[in-house]
Image (cartoon, rainbow, N blue to C red; front, side):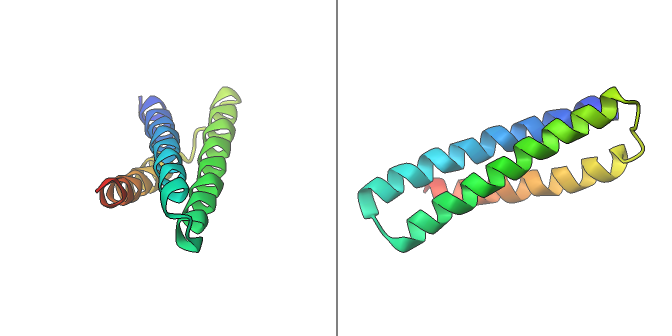
Length: 92
């Protein structure tokens, strides 16, 4: 059960990070500052990290290596909270 929750949180992190990229891209088109460009690259790197994390964790589960489930759930949950806060302050 925890495995599905972890994968769900990881998938949500990918979607939230993609939303950040869209917002940063729109902001960069309007503002054209180094800060918005930097945030766009940061979010893109973060998206790659989240997507790879999702893929590798799913691969580990397929091989029956689920010993890190609780740890991953806690880490990805706090990561999700951080992304949500960043998305909230960026949206305004």
